[in-house]
Length: 64
Image (cartoon, rainbow, N blue to C red; front, side, top):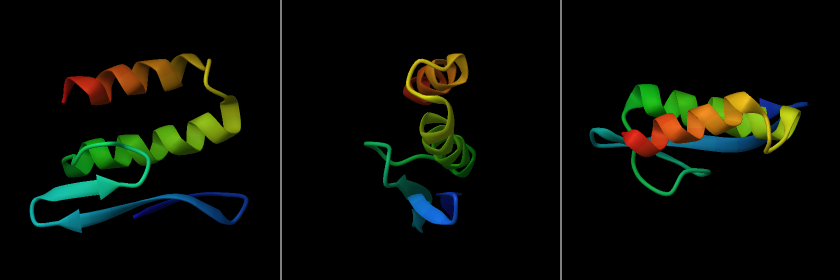
């Protein structure tokens, strides 16, 4: 899986066994969380670090 902005890849997710490794997240994730992490990477680029969605998605991923 990849996240792109303006045609440029900003993050990738690769499945290894039962886990997904996303280039912008420090630990392995399940598939749904990997999708959230890729969406988060895109949102940071397009809306900035202080965006409410960015903050909530980070909290959600930290709970997993």
